[in-house]
Image 1 (cartoon, one colour):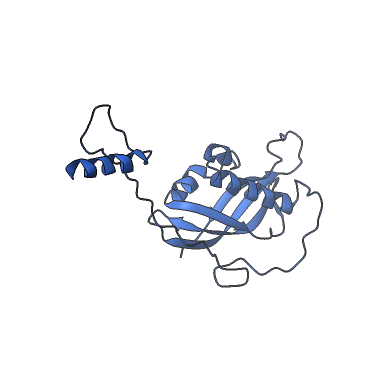
Image 2: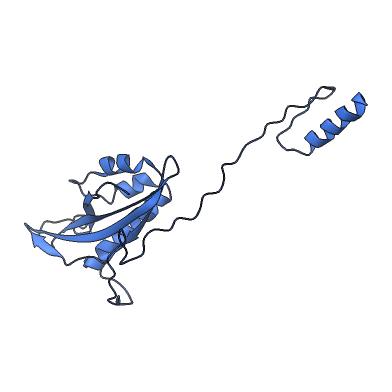
Length: 186
């Protein structure tokens, strides 16, 4: 009977890819079992117009190419930024911040999250000041904290680009993230 149990244990362990049995070893095999965490429910952030969601702006968006110098171009920069973050390309994402921005501080704040997603709202009107143009864009961040709890935060990200003034470089005339203002997440 003892031999039958040992053979059954060896056959059962041979089916498992995590098991290794040394030749000539007649003792029970060591099984390494990974326990998967239970699947988490899909994220369901507040919809536009709901508390915590983006403004419910029903203005149709123009189809076709977007002028990279327009406020919509600034919105595209934010879409690219969060796509890079979600893809784990933080170094590339950091390049979308202006010199006076705080990418490291923002990245440190994002490190408390297990996963981060963003909904980008309609950009506001562009405003000029001291040779630069600024535009505020509403952003809804949502995802999971490191402990698995869901979060939702709504704030504003400001983008800046230099006007087309003599002496400005092509890089300066592109939109860059200037500031991120988010209250405590919920």
